[in-house]
Length: 276
Ligand SMILES: [Zn+2]
Ligand SMILES: [Zn+2]
Image (cartoon, rainbow, N blue to C red; front, side, top):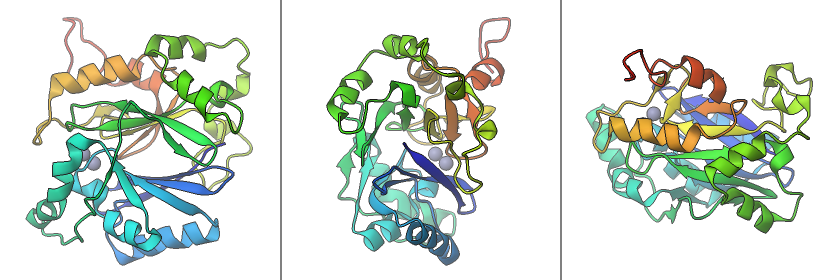
C-alpha cells in the first residue's frame, strides 16, 4: 500500500510528495527544497522512517519544482525521471532562478524518460503516468487507482496491463460493485490515517503537478503553455477517472476529482458553454 507524505517547500510553497510502500522504496516527487532547513527536514524524515529513495520524479521542470533535484540526487545517488519535452526547461532551471534572485545548484540533466508508455514502479507499487500538457509541454500527472483495483503484490505485469486500459475502461473499473464503502470514504474519516502522513494507504490518488489545483488550474502564460491544451488534457485524461480520487496538486490543499468537476470555475462551463 502506498504511503504519502507532503512537504511544502520554497517560497512558492511547492508540494513535494514522498511515496513509498512496504518495501520502503521511495519516490520523491518535485523536491523543490531550497533552504538548508528544508533539506534537513526532508533528510530527517527519510532517516526516521528508514525510507530508501529510489528516484526523483518531476511533474514538470519549472524551477520551483526542481530546486532540490541536485541536492536529493547527490545525497541519495539517484536519478530523475522527467518527460523528454521538459528536458530543455530543466537545463535552464538554474538560469531561470537567477532571474528571480535565487541561486540553485543546476539540476542533473542525465535524466530518465517518463511517459504514458511505462508505469512508474517502486517496491510492489506502480503509478500510471498521464501526459497532461498545457501548463508546460511535458507536464504529467501520476495516477494511483483505488487499491481494490490494484494487483496483488508481485504481479506488476498484470497491473501494467490494467494501467494500459483505455480511460473509459478504467472509469468502469472504478465502479466495481465489490468496492467497499471504505474505499470511497474521505481520508479524514479513516482511523488509520496518521497526522504525519497524508493518506490512508488504500486511497486512490492523482498527483497533478501544476495541471489542476483545488479551485484552479495551472497558468498558461509561461513559455510552452497553452490554455486550450490544458483544458483538453484535464477533460480527456483526468475527467474519465473516478470522482472519489484524491487530487494532490503541486501547490495548495488537496481536493477530490468529483469536487473539482462540479465546482472548479475553470472547468465548469458557463451558460454560454465556454469556460472562465
Ligand atoms: Zn509550473
Ligand atoms: Zn509550480
